[in-house]
Image (tube, rainbow, N blue to C red; front, top):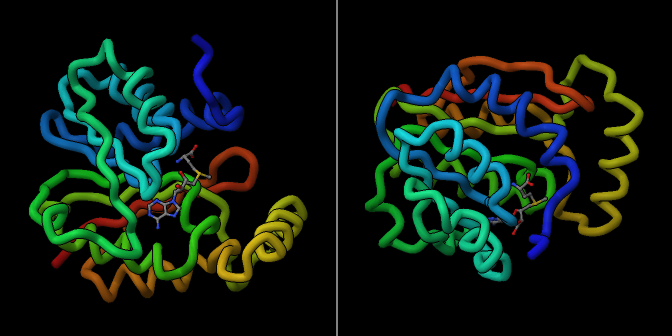
Length: 199
Ligand SMILES: C[S@@+](CC[C@H](N)C(=O)[O-])C[C@H]1O[C@@H](n2cnc3c(N)ncnc32)[C@H](O)[C@@H]1O
């Protein structure tokens, strides 16, 4: 059976992995929010069988795809429904070393980005990391033409969407006890952003 796939995942999964592996622990649990088809988490879980990987998304629509894709891997948990704009109390009891969020914060209201940090404050262990991937605006940097067009397209689809200013995301992280730890330039004018839980 051919499972639904995002073509961009095949292009970005190795560059993402090359950054992410610097922040993965030897053992422990990793959560991905906004997993969609589960392609990233499946790829990473195969490379790191010693870690337990928890997929999630606000929508259950693609959970069957995640389950089908990951059924041969013992280290991927059943996907759970986590809407970052309204997190259930039960999910705040979880604990993880790293949270991944790939290509979501520009395709969701700002409230989802706030929710992502609020959730992380509860579930990420002290010294743990948040890994974000996607396009960003930066105050004193010219935005690539492709991202200017993408931003307009997102905003016309939904006025609450749009490419975020990195500075705003960093300020928000700070409010929730996460400091900007590292920033990596990625292919196609994307960034990898690493936040560390400091308090
Ligand atoms: C563009 S897809 C990215 C999927 C995948 N991470 C990737 O890079 O291929 C955006 C995903 O964000 C999810 N999403 C949007 N708003 C969300 C929210 N408030 N909480 C959790 N997930 C959300 C959507 O359901 C969708 O699966």
